[in-house]
Length: 73
Image (cartoon, rainbow, N blue to C red):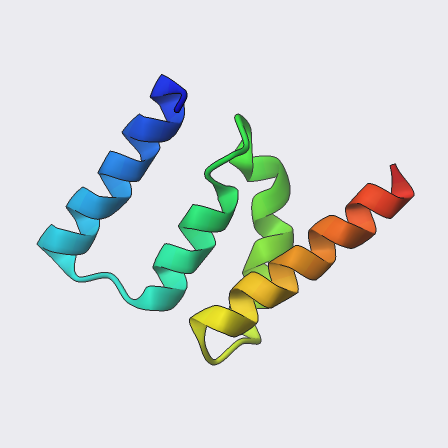
């Protein structure tokens, strides 16, 4: 695992333990973890995040966005 990804994962776990962030926020952050510049993809994910009621919807919606993005590229 790349160091940057490990550091990001450790940060998420630390916040989860200390602040008790909700599952949707965790799903959103985990969905962006593989990107070096998550601010590029974050606006798309925020739309999915704001219209979803649970973690599964966020992850499924994000997978659909990535599939569409892949088709365009």
